[in-house]
Image (cartoon, rainbow, N blue to C red; front, side, top):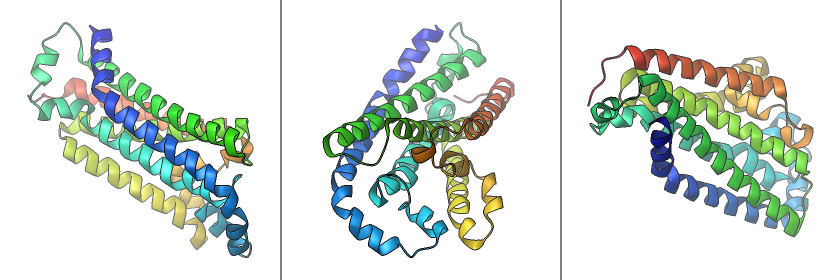
Amino acid sequence: MSSELLTHELRHRRNGTVVLGLTLAGYAFFAVAISGSLRQTVDNLTKNMPQGLKAFVGSNVPGGYIVGETFTLIAPIALVAYAVIAGSSAVAGEERDRTMSMLCAQPVTRTRILSAKASALTLSLLAVTALFWAGMALADLAYGSQLTARGLAAGVTHLLFLGLAFAAIALAIGAATGRPEIASSAAGGIAVAAYLSNAMLPLAGMGRWAELSPWYYALSSDPLRNGLDLAHLGVLTGLGALAVVVAVITFRRRDLKG
């Protein structure tokens, strides 16, 4: 029954996953295609900027401004938005749609239901990031960039773990409240606040406080240049695992609707 539930969840998320993955892949391909022609212009505009501001606009990463914006703004925001929406509706959506009673009537525990939902979220996000990686890798082969295979894989991996952390947060809030609108609003608000704190606090000389943001652990180690940061990935993994534990506990104890 658990495998059937997982298959159902993956089928349910298939269209959104493929559309987002292909959109990011296409954007990445064209971003690399035009980055070469704009690189010199952007370098001239940003060469006198403070290092913190260069990091904020994404001009100090391999591949230049366009690639930097792709990895520090466009792709992570799209991935986190998808993670929040999907995570919020994974459990709470069943209650909103009045299908939870049918699901719980099957020979499967609540823990296994939540496990299948979380596994489907993980596989969906993995598929989106894999398509994004493929688009960027193909563009690099076609047009060339300063990205290395190691850096590209590390950058995409960091984005994947960021998305997983916020998906788990949204899942936990949805499991605790049974209200997808509350879960998406709360998790989305956390994501926006965390992004702004990571982007703005270093510019205000308060960089240490930015370490409270999950975005810090996804982007600050410059994975495109330096490769994987296992410590930072460990923090994101721990945050996601904690959120899943909260989701399990609250989901098992709560009186379900629908």
